[in-house]
Image 1 (cartoon, rainbow, N blue to C red):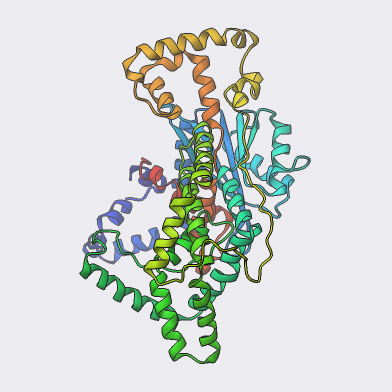
Image 2: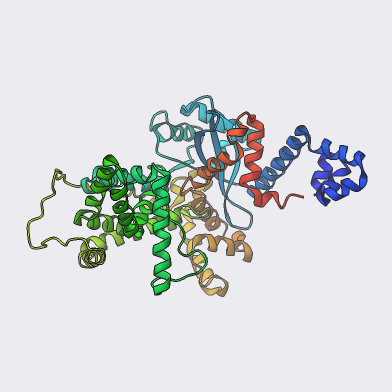
Length: 511
């Protein structure tokens, strides 16, 4: 509050925050002051000042240390291409932070244009490429091209800027590739779910019909004690079309269809009876596919596969996720998938059989030869997650030779042994579960100065980005800040509003 008074130099600022009654008591003179404060120029000054102070607090936490850049670009509601920039760093408390510092208009999305935009934004806050130790983007060629991609141009400026392809995008691309290239997955999503979503989602009457059926079924289940009541339970489920760039959307779509399976069948049966010939034929066709062994088998298989990977998707979107833990989680996910492939047949068939019996789906002869009707068989191609070289990752001096002198590297093994002995004997370091917790505890206990070389190496590992979810959230916020009714907002105003919106926790601490 004091900050706003200082910026504006207006005595009536306090009145503005004390409520409208104060202005009524002061009469028309005070009301004129309120009108002045509400003027769009003054509002812009307030927002700009808040954005500046918020960015200042971020830079103070950075304290001229090393950082990684997270970059993404997207068009806003007025079709202007915008580039957002986030910084990932370790603050003075040893905590890993990912903060949004600005968005700039990019005339085009070429790598050179994005590089100039990044450099200008860094220079605005007195930051340079010499401090960049990591960079994270999605997989487009203009971002990670080996010759003229943004990652290559940044590495030409700073060879120590190690590039990490966004783990979340890698996982999503893998899932999308499976859904598209595998014949069974393609049949499920393209030949069955797409017509179902178009038929149900394309008509408000059908959606309302489905909603009413689901309400009746939930009420019946509650009366029989089949489901429980409580906060967050029995929420209304909708049909969202799976999207290649929306993480976990394929999993949520098929999961909702299975949860609403009996309601969907009842609704489609009712539509067959009351609709015209065209809608009746569509409904009958979808019912035929839903009541097949193929659908039940493949749908449950996809739910099992995507269910295992969904935990990884959620974890990768955390701000404080570190790359070592992310790699470990990827290996755990691969192990669980392999375990399901080797030993999960019986449990999977039990789920399929139980589901088919419950909803009256005809069970096929499991002893007979299975032929896929109307579809050719393709040999499935195994897709694997991109793997990092663990030995190199755990030796950051390989990537950052300028940060360590030859003598430091020579005696590092001894420093590491001293560090391990010291930590094991200190009870304060027991029961720590992650590198992030270790770094925070080192700062709290003052050991970050005693074991300075080890602390620096831990910082460099944690600075490496895991996913670009922070930048993705910026563009989600942009749809709220620059809506259709505000599509003429200027670039500076957009930048200031986004900073205060995305970093609202820091804005509340501005004094």
